[in-house]
Length: 81
Image 1: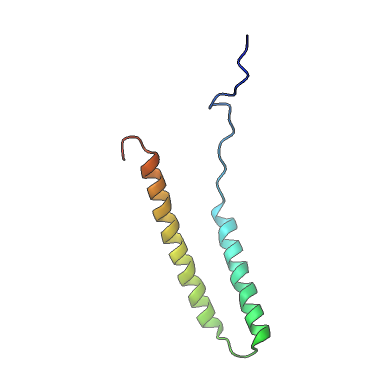
Image 2: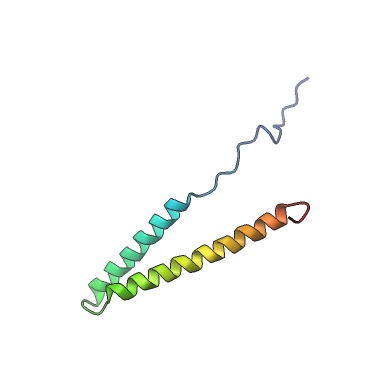
């Protein structure tokens, strides 16, 4: 008889999101918000300030993602390394 349940080795590996896709998505989101605010209140925005805010937001996101990945790695490691 054959066993109908799939083994762990035959299961497809879990796919992770690509970093470049996330970065491009965030950049497009920032640009869309900038253009929306510019159309609502023309002339009230400083592009340098928006760029600084975007860089700071991406930096915070990268730090949080790194902490989350390290925490997940520590939880999944059986010996705590």
